Image 1: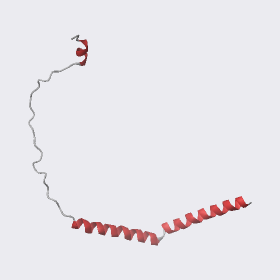
Image 2: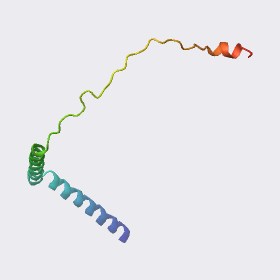
Image 3: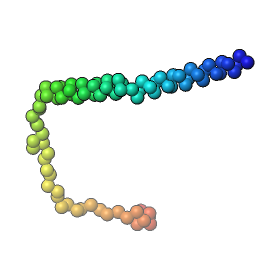
Image 4: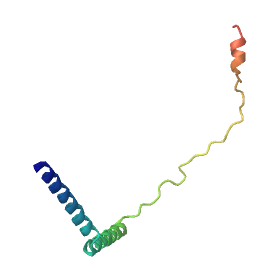
Length: 87
């Protein structure tokens, strides 16, 4: 008997907890507070972004292009021909 009563108390506590959490989460007060905090964060981001210094670019003419040479003096190896040779 005591065991069933204890389980009943646990389930009631769990359901009450979920009910009150849901009630607060979907309340107008919570929605207003979250909206205000989002606006405050956006205002802070705008203020800090306006204060950031802009650095000059120092990467002009940093890439040096090399002309490609037409030296195709590479010896072409074929795998099967290398295996067939008995040197």
